[in-house]
Amino acid sequence: MIEINQVSHHFTLGKKGQQSHLDVLKDISFHVSEGEIVSIIGRSGSGKSTLLNLISGFIRPSEGEIIILDEKVSEFTEEEFADFRLKNMGFIFQSFQLIPSMTAYENVELPLILKGMSEQARKQMTLEMLKTVGLESFKDHYPSELSGGQQQRVSIARALILEPPLILADEPTGSLDSETEADLLAFIKKLNKERGITFVIITHDDEVAKIGHRTIEIADGELIRSGVFV
Ligand code: ADP
Ligand code: MG
Image (cartoon, rainbow, N blue to C red; front, side):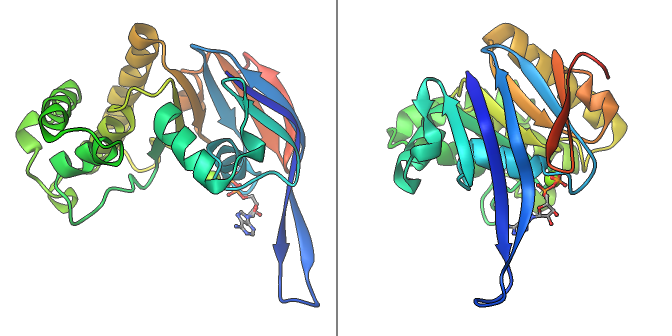
């Protein structure tokens, strides 16, 4: 499903004339098969989020190529990637990234509006998805009126509503208590098993990494281990 071939990335820092390069990822290669859960671990600052941003197309690699679902996405334009993302990817972030001025219902419905679906179809799908994550009775609550765990479930519902084959998660349990974390991990496993959704999950927590069928460890921008070791 995902093929990362000799990918390197640097950021350019400083003003024009006195710029420096920060090498963040160095010659990374790995693949993720359909239906797999792959965890990516490593210390803070090792380059994990940058790697996920490359897969998500929010940035393009300085070198190397990224192929997702047989498409060479590392050569996509912004517009092509936006379209590809909407069709194929869902995102779960540590900070939820919900829109504060929209209710739970409106946040979950948003991808359907972007896709141009009719109001009737949107309503049915949105209510069903809110039910799946157990938030039916909270549909009219704003993010500020929900607990951290509930907000995370709204963000998951939004990530899932278009049934993407691939879900990318950056520290998804980072702001959850341990009980809510356990619930979320069980839910991810269930989605993987029942719907065959592929997950790439970044974490610095070994307990979270354990739900992966495989783990990849990044240190100082290099892939140092891959396999079953957590
Ligand atoms: P991790 O997610 O593993 O904590 P990141 O990928 O966020 O690591 O960051 C890796 C390194 O790249 C850090 O040194 C960070 O400061 C730097 N970095 C990340 N994003 C940018 C950016 N947009 N511009 C410049 N440097 C960045
Ligand atoms: Mg990070």
